Length: 355
Image (cartoon, rainbow, N blue to C red; front, top):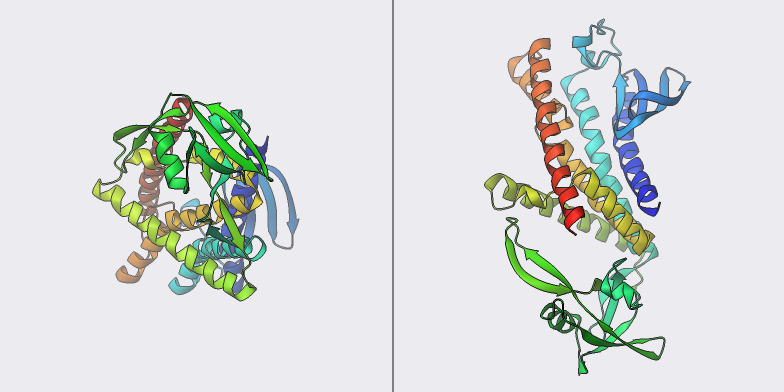
């Protein structure tokens, strides 16, 4: 239930923010907006206010803003000055760019809120502080909790998280004893690290290691409002650079498509983040928001980036593409996008089944 609610919250907010960008700039440009929908048809519920119908639809795979005269191939264009195609190339480009831009702004806001209300994570160099504990993991089974401090592994004192992790990794499938402290009290238990296979970025198998299912713990120091916004912006830029580097690796073949997650992975990660706390959910939402912004500006017909390519070609040609040319390009783009979704979903399900 937590996973489903977290996924609905994250995807609902990000889709709403994206479409709100298109909507607001379309209104600013004087374009008639006929429908603002979260989800794709068939329609679930809706209400008409003024000239726009606001609705929630049954297919939760995104959303859309329907503007008058947006699709000439549907025969809807009449030449009215309030139609999308009647506006200048610059105005139409602004409407298209507004969606991904709003996703980037949402990421900055989410990162900033985490810093503002939870603080800046700082590595505790004096203790082996435990962070998130994976549900159903060996650590969870012996009662380890977020905030516990591990003191020893098999009666040998550990001073850093890396030292503890390296000892655990060499004991895959073998029992060992952990000693930890919580609120001034000492606890100990036998634990058997789960066998895991490390993979490199190309998706190839690497080495067998032991895992107990704990993350690195941090202490948090307060951050002011202005500093939070500045740092939240820097984090968004860092995630953007990382994402472009990842995409470059995909195209060059240095990174495997197996490393990409789709809808199933997003739902799973949203649930995991939600169980770790609302701050982790906001962090995940910020990262996903940047990813959605970048995905949407890729030059693939049917995505915002594809529409920007159409506008660039119109500028160079002095006239828009024909209806047939647009239709063929969008069919190809839809096929490519569908192939990508099927591929990443397959690998998501495979990861889910194999752990």
